[in-house]
Length: 100
Image 1 (cartoon, one colour):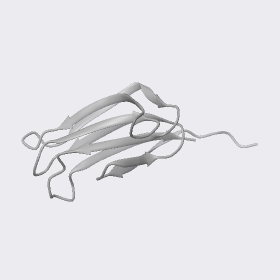
Image 2 (tube, helix red, strand yellow):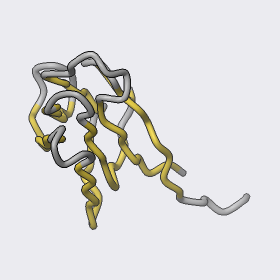
Image 3 (cartoon, helix red, strand yellow):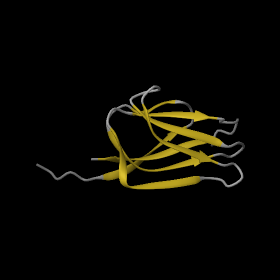
Image 4 (cartoon, one colour):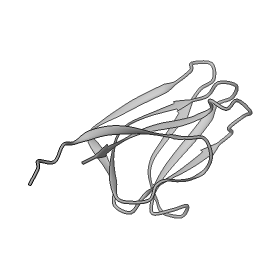
C-alpha cells in the first residue's frame, strides 16, 4: 500500500452554493472584492448549516487572505454564501482545502 500524501488544493467560488460536497479541512481562504466589498459566509452542511466562518474582502484593501492552523473541519460539505458580489468576475473567494 502506498502512503497518503496530504496537500492543499484551491477551489474558486464566485456564486453562492456548495464548494465541495464531502467532508474536508479548510487550511486557508482569500476573499477578493474588486469593484465592491464581498462578504463570504462558510457553512457546514448546506445553506442552513452551522456557520463556521465569516470573512469580508474590502474593495479598497483588495484581497483578505486568512490561514487556519489547525485547519477548520467541515463534517458534511462546504457551503459558501457570497453577498454583494458586484459585477467584476474576479469578485469571490478562493478556498484551500486539504486533500489526501
